[in-house]
Image (cartoon, rainbow, N blue to C red; front, side):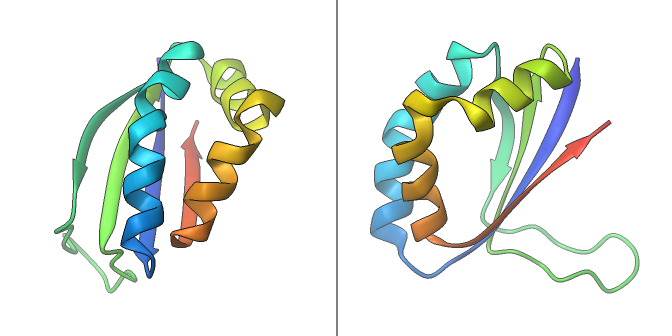
Length: 93
């Protein structure tokens, strides 16, 4: 199991809502899922830039995570997510 941290500063909530409609199925297609998500992350230590949306994703392995982000059939969905605001996804491992 490997995890990825999704962080977003949403400027287009409508686009994020549309993305969420297909996100679960897109993750599942590559064995991934959302473990938890929140609109209210907070700093535990230090002074990180706090996003207004954060989620912890899980995948069976790094190859599955890379297959999800690089899946040409999901390109439009990833573009929709990116249009929702400033987003980052960090692979933890």
